[in-house]
Length: 99
Length: 172
Image (cartoon, rainbow over all chains, first blue to last red; front, side, top):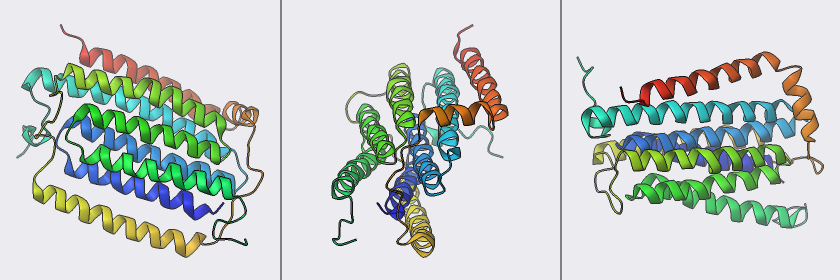
């Protein structure tokens, strides 16, 4: 199988995730798009690990899964807190720190 | 390589079918107006990702992907949707303005062109090895010898994230 297949799939998913982060204003949807981005990177790591005959790609992919779990836990706690304080998770309304 | 499909016809067909499902699912995740549907499309993408890991011979990561992502993270998302009382059914208020959307499309397209060019420029025609299954024992060996310090750091990070999430989310 061609390496470029996996790399292109990963790039396409990454770009879709970037679009999601930029175009959504619901905080939970933005977090979902970030998950898409993190997952897309994982394919790259494993594919390059296979090409180089090294296991490090697998290990880093596992680390990314762990970091993504931590990120989503804290992220959703933050979203919950924002909702509790402002009864909305609209990211456009979060302009408290705007100068 | 004798055909357009290459040497491993079945693997290539599986790749393209799963890839098509994943891309359609990902597009739905970022475009659908229904928040719950977005989470369920995310399940399709993440499951497809596990399939791709199996095609790459990384079965341990595929199983971890299913357990952690599909089992835990999507459930977390559904809890997040539930607790923020998102509208069930169509929610017209999840997308940004037209300017944000257009700039999002532009940035994503430019990024895709740049990355696609770089990938094809460097890796065109590179074939993956036929025998690419890496035994899980090797992953374990690597984690607990070469990568022991990052592994411990990840453990502390997870603990910190867990405590942080509890502190943030509890009502007092």
